[in-house]
Amino acid sequence: MSSSEQRRRQLAREKFERQQKRREEARRRTKRITAIVAASVAVVAVVGVSAFVLSGKDDDKDKKSEAAASQSPEPTPSETESKAPEPPMTIDKKATYTMSLGTSQGDIAFAMDASKTPHTTNSFKALADKGFFDGTKCHRLTTQNIYVLQCGDPKGDGTGGPGYNIPDENLTALGKAGDDGAVTFPAGTVAMANTGQPDSGGSQFFLVYKDTKLPPTYTPFGKLDKESLKVVETVGAAGVEGGAGDGAPKKAVEIKKAAVEKD
Image (cartoon, rainbow, N blue to C red; front, side, top):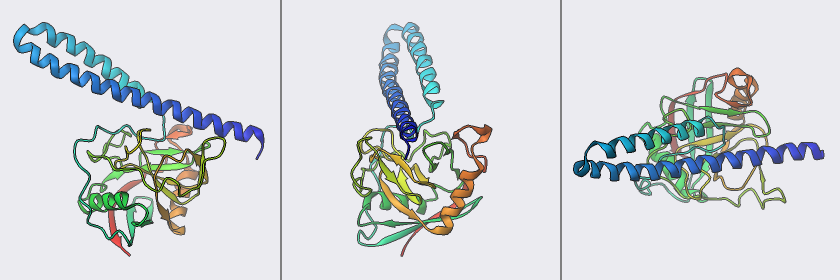
């Protein structure tokens, strides 16, 4: 690989990491503002309207910071704070499972090894069983240096999740990171998106349609079959709306029905 190509890839990864950091900082500001607003509401009962006006200004600042963060393309979502426990473990941890997605661009299926990713597999089965993914769109496609189709967000804007988080798993499966801090996620890999913080996965996941180098911080939990990979490759080849390298796919992908079955 030429040094210029290595440099381009390194710059792309560094850009993503900076964007992740900005998104995490915005999330933390949101948390702080929420605490301020809650305190202001309590003060209103004592001192009147002035506290409410102050909290309103802070809230406006928060909305602006959230909007700025949401405009930054990044490979991970900023999901809401975990408010609920993950689903109880009901799967067979020694079995393999297949997740099937009936989409507007064709059927997509991938295998999940519960012995390596029990929490992720169990969560996806629980979500699929209750129709969580049905009617959602794969909201993000990247076509420059990083080649993934990202799905699983009920809001469709990169900020949604199931209301809980699951732990990272299987992070060493793709080998040891190189000097650039990255490993290769082979085409066909299905991995969890996250906020950039450990154990922050929710429901968003990405489908790799061309070998991609990323830090080994994303749980690899599935493998697309050949026909499914072709479907995602076709979406990738069509590009992003507006011709950018990162954004909504030109070929819109809606998940009509998702199901997880034991093999």
